[in-house]
Length: 353
Figure 1 (cartoon, helix red, strand yellow):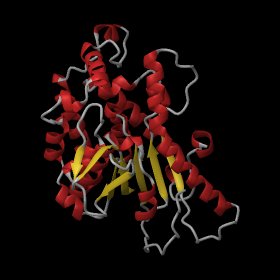
Figure 2: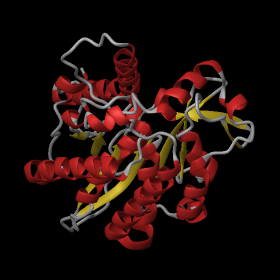
Figure 3: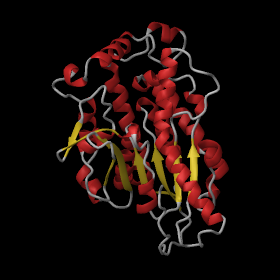
């Protein structure tokens, strides 16, 4: 269970800024939805981001937010996010993972009929990436090396960054951060290392896989290391389904959603439990840090998307998700902006308990 720290003495802040920390789920190309959410949130000049936590694509978005703010404030973050996703889309033009003819005819963004995806899906069931990719090439390495200055980010403390990865040998969660000064190219690659597609990433003599298996995303560092009590989760993986999955792809997709939501449900339950203790007077006011939880999601936007679409980097698909994200953020801001710093706006019980 998360032990929420005692609320310490706050800085004397007299401005009207809204201060939040943001936790971002991973999900490959589905992270373009988070890009849209962030793009709209960062338009608010009085919104201050104190911390970002991300896994996989969420980690990429988190890094772009932190470095963008470091170099150019909120507008700098919007610009770097756009640059990252434009480069991702451009690099994907040569990818074999494109919608098949039937996918296009049916107006779907999935890759269920993509020859490249079907071949990859088959090969990764019988061959490991050590056999398929003996040179251990990683297409993300060049992108992250070009975009992010890890030395400067490790020295930057205005926005705290947390990246989740899975330690291969122990199965434990590893959090890389500028708080602990261990952000690096390898750390960022580790948080997005799918073990069926990429060889494990070595960081300081230890091997790591994608953080989504154990922290998607990890929230507790935002509680302990950030001053704000407001934590916003940008969620990609649907919680609820109204139909029983019966096809092989449908069952696999639903298992992927459930697995990727497990860690966040566990943390949310613990946070809700502590908050209830405070509300019920069992814990005296000021003894533990009160948290305000916010949630932005659009399950309808992802309802007909499966795991395969997480590899689809076509511009039209990324634009679709980006616009969906901006719309969700716009609706949330209109309804809840004034509640930041005052109350929880997420229905934690309905969503996670």
